Image (cartoon, rainbow, N blue to C red; front, side):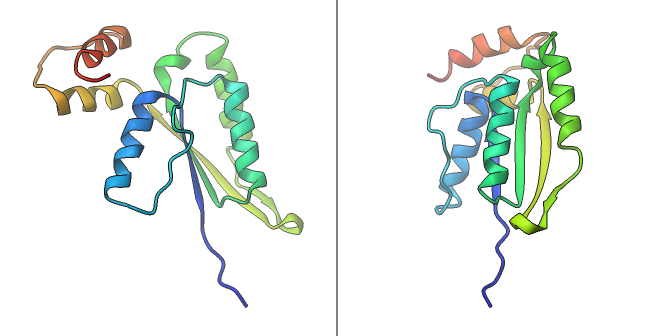
Length: 140
């Protein structure tokens, strides 16, 4: 009998998160990161990607969520509903589906990590826009 494999799908929501995961390819040569040019997604697109991952048989789906894009309505409420929908693992033994969906929420920390990597600063950032503006001066 074959050995069961644990597989994981990581859904990064924006370009900054993508660059972080892409940097893991330097260490883990066998990783493939898709899509090559991610964008901020809406809740419906994210839900579709999760459903596709479940159908493809992933054991775990990790959703890296940029909470700065979820601070206003209706995104905030839609995101809360999505989290509630996937709060429990998905078990469909007849279809061979066993999947756990986890949401990992970030605020400005990912962008701030990259800014600290590229330049020294002690400036406090009250909002995402000013941080992104400074980060864009360091990277494309």
